[in-house]
Length: 117
Image (cartoon, rainbow, N blue to C red; front, side, top):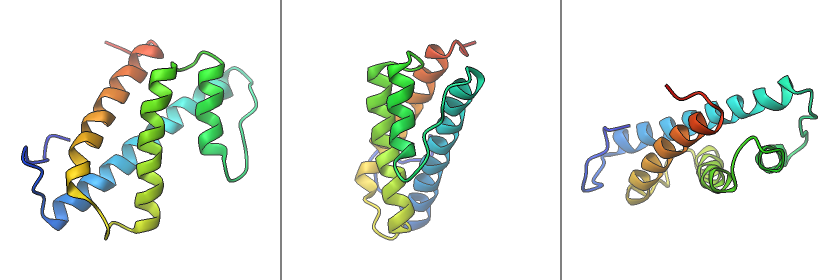
């Protein structure tokens, strides 16, 4: 995730690669979060809003903190936008903060789940 230029000037290929990476990172985070309720025998939300509901359930059950939920909702929102905009409406100025946010969210998730080195 260090491929972003410091001034935020990305060409189209770099922007699409960064956006695709953010999409993949959030999807991976979501899969990791889903493992905990499954392991605990907790119900897994279904339906159109399950992505949002799993974050709320993870926070309510002490799996993730309120701060991490907020960070993940930001990434989830980007993933939703990316999936529906197909990358042609990307604002490269917004990608750097999202990439940094993703890095911080992954680190915080590792800490909160006890997966840190």
